[in-house]
Length: 437
Image (cartoon, rainbow, N blue to C red; front, top):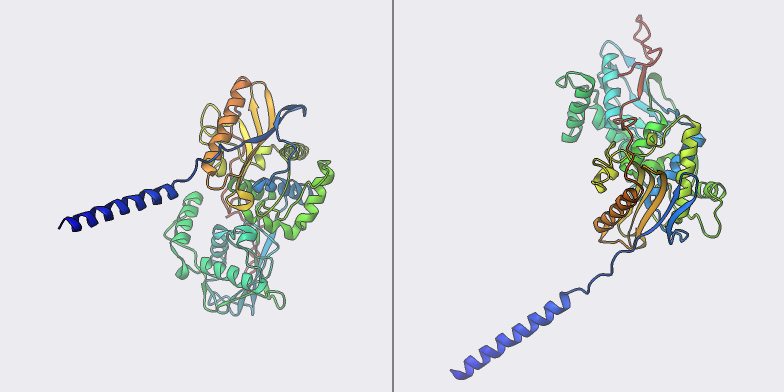
């Protein structure tokens, strides 16, 4: 009996020892404090403070500021892109049916969403078209919905076209809606004052295709996109990586890098850009980012724009600023910072970047704050950035907020539908100034 008890006690001690050793192995060593790097200049370009401001970092989505500057100057703030809808095989107006395929010719509109597709469906219904006998066929410059930029883009153009055509068919045909599309319709109807119970629908009997180059058919209507400034504002506010779609109109990242090198008078390895969105391994120093911000402000001013037309303002616009910086988005700081966030969770060990302009009682200051090596600690990095910036503003006599300017538009706002087709014997249905739906 005593032997059994002794064995039992030895087992208990062994288990306790193993548990203690296991616990010791699981206990991680204390992590070193996060290190903030920064560069700040006043309105005249005088350096106010800098900590490793000359050393290149991964700017993450702050690259979108460079892409926005390039787009603003190369394409123009008022650029609108037309997506054209054709009836291949003509229209049976008596039956309200496209006899063949609905062929869609996109021109590279990077922000065509479900809301825009619903506008098209409603316009087709108003023209008397309620059914597509064939398929929905799109070309290689039609996009719909988010893809998460290069990280989520389908590289095969045919597969990508099929995906986009499938999304469009689902949005056009009420019988294929899911809960998300139904919710989008209700919100759209509420904004426009429409009867939400009368949902638009164009029934699609065929499948989908990704060609749309030859034998287009008869032009039915044109969807003209919102101006480029609206698109850039939305992409920057939500930090959407599909800004890369503008590369079709602008060019590759290497051309943007060349423009920045000359424009910002950079030397050495700066800049190095893999993408137009900030995904991947890109390089710009905090000082270069500050000068990039200055260039964007100059470009906006030359076009009678405020930087708040292109970038979000904390406390005024939804998106990543509001999500990550609660103090700066609330009084008394709301309206005193316009900027852009950048976040990478794993690339280069993770990084959190915040760049922009703060308005204090002592004047405007251009800044770039970055926390490299922030993998797994991004929330902590954002708190560090906010505390630093709030302290900086307070040290310069406090915030100087300005009234919120232009609001962030919804996906379909600013777009125009032009109805072109006409029934035999009827009047041409044409919105001379564009039917704003």
